[in-house]
Image (cartoon, rainbow, N blue to C red; front, side):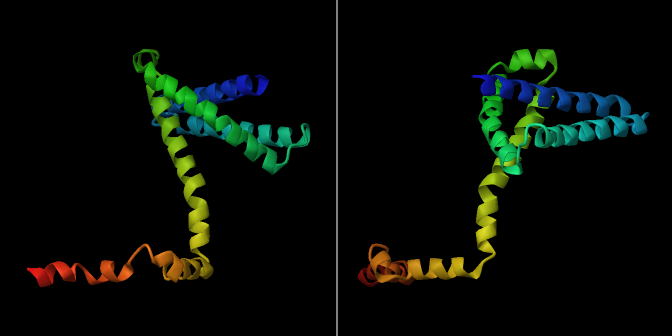
Length: 160
């Protein structure tokens, strides 16, 4: 329960940071570009220092941090779904843009998690060789009837 509650706090802090950057972009980007870049730099340094502190004090490895990120993802997805369900309230508070940006980030991250192994395997030539052997294996292709697929419907043409 503690990890689940902590994951809610982490996701809400991420949403708050995203809203801060969004407000800073609207207010400071044209006139005070240096201030806006300093704010973004401080956010980045804070993020890196939190990771270093977790690694040094809590003796977390990179794998542990990756597992924590994977554990927080369902919580964030649940919060996104809750925010979508209460969209009028979220719009009234003014957080709808940040919710959309967070959802876009989730889609990008999930796409990376799903397609990175596929892209990694596509680099190796043995995968295509394995696919070819599977496809043209007699035991596998018995049910496929490749010759009928490649030849078209010659039977139907002859009867016409």
